[in-house]
Image (cartoon, rainbow, N blue to C red; front, side, top):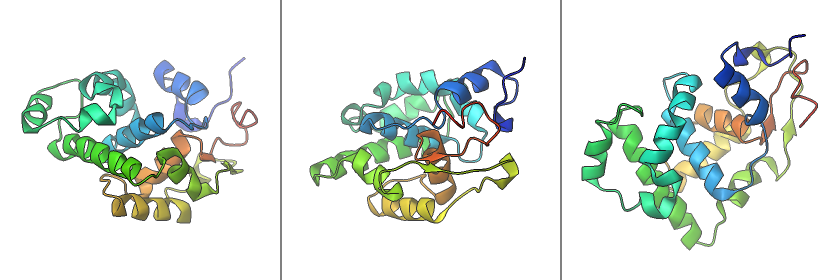
Length: 187
C-alpha cells in the first residue's frame, strides 16, 4: 500500500524522507531556525530539492550554521566558497549567510531571542491549514509579509515574503500538509 503524501514530495526518496520527517515539524531551537532560514534563502530561483541535496555541504561550508563562527568569515572565505561545487556558487547568496549571521547576533545583543521573534508571527501557535490540494496552498500570506519586512528591518537578506512562507512551512509555523497526507493529522 502506498503512503499518501503531499504531491510535491514526488517519488524521490530524499524528498519523501524530508517530507515525512522534517517539513512542517515545529522547530523551536533558535540556531536550527537560523540554519533553515539561511537554507531557504539559498533556494531563491531554484527548486528546494537542489538545496536539500546540498544541505550537508552547506553545513560543512558554514560551520554547521554557528553564527558566531560565520561572522568571522571574510572576503577570502567568500572567494573560496565561490569555488565550492557542493553549494550554490552565487556570491550574493554566500554573502547573505554571513550577513544573516551578523543580523542574528545583533538581535541577541538587543536581547531578542530568535525563536521567540520567529514564532511571534503566528502568535506562538501552529497555524493548521486545511488544504485539499497543493494548488490551494499560497506562496505568501499576511504573516509571511510581516515576517519578511521585520527580518529585513533587522538586517537579514534573501528573506522575501515567498522565502519566508516556505520557511514557515518548513519549520512548522504553519501546517500545510494537504488533508489527505499521512502527516496532516500528526501535527
